[in-house]
Length: 336
Figure 1 (cartoon, helix red, strand yellow):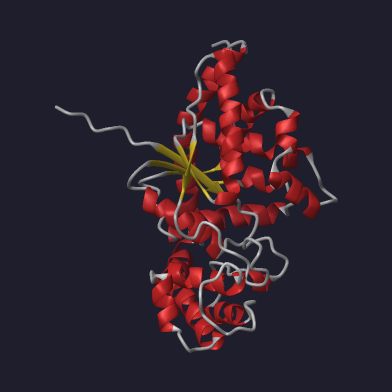
Figure 2 (cartoon, rainbow, N blue to C red):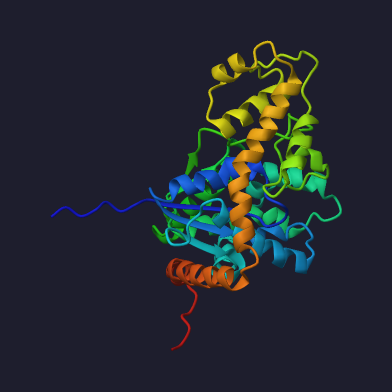
């Protein structure tokens, strides 16, 4: 009798540091839903990563609960995946310390995200911001992760996780699975509606630059109407025209239409028609997510039950890995 092949493990996470956007949905969460039937998926709310930037404690707690609700509203099924809050599994912080002692200062100083975030937060360039990639490596390596869904701008984090894993494996014998990136095809990098050369960000100080998953239909349409394009008024894909190209990509994600079909549909029509169509398609797509979110976000007992079960399941896996690591580096076992 043939045994069923073991599924590969996928790990991914998002921070609860702001209102999740269509960029988070199209670039990550939508893909999580598609992957949950094909892989052993482990998803978390990365609240530990969030505090590299100053957070209001009560707001962070609320957003952690809301982010969990959004995951589920988008279709992440707690019965199919391990779904938990990062800080509720202390093994993440514990492994991060050991890995930080196996990571070189120069490797961290070359990380693009550290340079970018330091430039944006000159008054709070803290050590956590610098060692952020080590915690991310711990997130991944704890679960013997095979694949990590990433956009093109996140590949550097997978590379340093592999470097750290390889260094540890060479020094102490094979311990960690070597993770690989799982690059999704569509929607991996959604750009700002106001600065289309930049990635859409939930922390953008300009609310017109992003579409929150919880924005009202009127706000969504208003934001798309004000989206930056150019003076050509030609709905045609052209990477030299990032504004209109971003809107075409978004409309394709919302409707499933190809670029060629979109260009034919709006041939001879102006940007006004096209922006309205993109806004309406976005609002239609988010309608079901928002209705489901409203049903569950106030059910604190339900969400906390999912957190509890998820953290217990994650901890069972994580502490097996951590026990191996502690033994190999020479930590004395806790007396029984």
